[in-house]
Length: 285
Image (cartoon, rainbow, N blue to C red):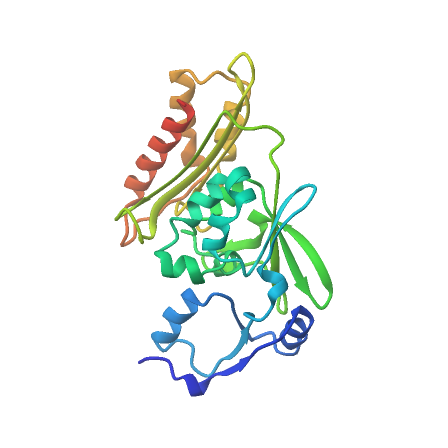
């Protein structure tokens, strides 16, 4: 059964204070950003009789702004605009590449970064880059603003730690202090485009002059209920040269940080093997 539009009550606040007031009065409102996931559920008849909070008129949440510390991306900025922004393209290429992998052009033109985060899919393409860039999520409520480390926004599959009445205002990404020696984004899916990932990875690696690891950041999506940084792998590699033995051990440690499952898209064994291969390729430079 398709959704019945007349069963919905749509609220269209003109600015953030109006949106927060409406949400505080009715925390069961369904926020609507780009609507790419919303429309799938609506078309399947799963969103009947909802009160919808349409955020599309909040122009201040559609901006990308440079700050002294980094870049601030409004929650309603689309994947296409992120790809086109010169500072983001220059400073955060992994996020740009991830946005280029989100569905087709229609989805990229409608889907928003904030909506992507609020949807909390384990397979979110932008999540590994936001993880290794150590982004912060700015959350607004009638109680004020709070900054939440990116990983702390997620509570599980399709679940966030956002409280009733809280909305994602923007995402801040700090500039990297030094250019990494190696960086990588890679999505593995059934098709070359418009596919939900079997595994998706992002990595940043800094080396000292003696070729030992100064810092490693590596994250995987579709490998656990939420995107995961490989903390065991990162800690093990610190201060070491990437010899074949070290790389082999790092790949073995990957299983300590993720918990993939068998599902209709792939098997646990395949996900682990491919993710280990991606990590191996990245560490070998």
